Length: 398
View 1 (spheres, one colour):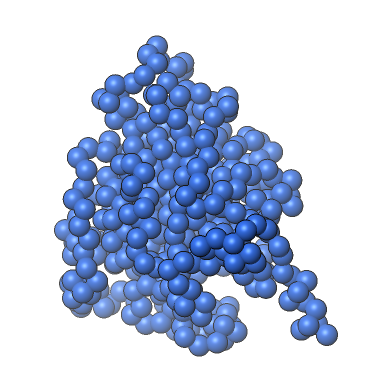
View 2 (tube, rainbow, N blue to C red):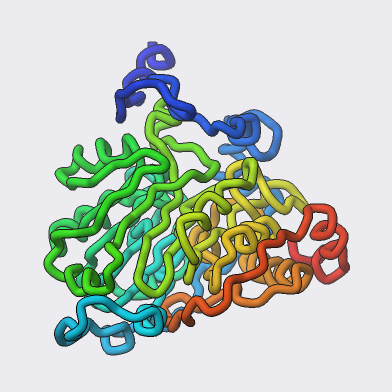
């Protein structure tokens, strides 16, 4: 009886609407195919995968129990403008010189600041990433203590997995700051169940950030701040039975000195979604995941998680000026060793002959350089990347 009743009880209907190229009126899907996201990344049974992950019987390297960090203090963060500038439309040079500071909180949580606008991605301050206080335990404390977090104007919420959608943190942020929360279809229903309003949009739709008391300081640039909900390649679930009832996404935020791209959590799929995001304008900063990709020895990517080599290809296709690797070093979600993602990223960037995509320390505010000259639109091929990274130094990175 339990096996019959419980799965239906745990299912949820988060969104109803007409069919589309990625929604069949009941569940969302990846238009470039779901074969690589539907099965466990190990190729075995889903029950066996979760059992091995929970018990640590997958031969995984040892992770540290705790990692020391240097948390940012309020004085280190970008301070708000004392008053709006006297001009009403910025020159290109003024727009390009707009300050931008990014502080990695940990995992996929990043505080991105420009004058008059504080943006927070997938905020998670919880100690565990899972339901009811269970799940992987945090090994690195948040890079900014919640009490030291400045006023948050805008939250980008990519999808409903527990390591990205933390209701306890979102409830605290809503009670304190009343931020605009932008997410993809269906996730707003999960937030509303806890009294948290959010704006949900489909892929290729945009939300204008206007009417917020502190965001008016950005309107004088003559370019409104808009959040574009963009495609990526992933899946969603909070209760197993509710798989793909809500949509997953990446985001592009149009900003005066160049756009912000947040990949959320994603596999490579057809690899065209970074190009679609780049078409919305020059990307000054990209937040790209590099972790939780390895579930068997030597694996460099899984269907729903890009690894460092593919992350470099995403960076190239975005033509981003600067990128910060996220989704590693906070929660143990997969097989790879603690320092393996940044080690592989360094090797992959060398193979591509690129600069501008390198790790930052949790809690250390990082000034983001202006956009500058647009990057060359070439991508290192899979064959070149595999051949270049087949070295003893890479092979020892478990």
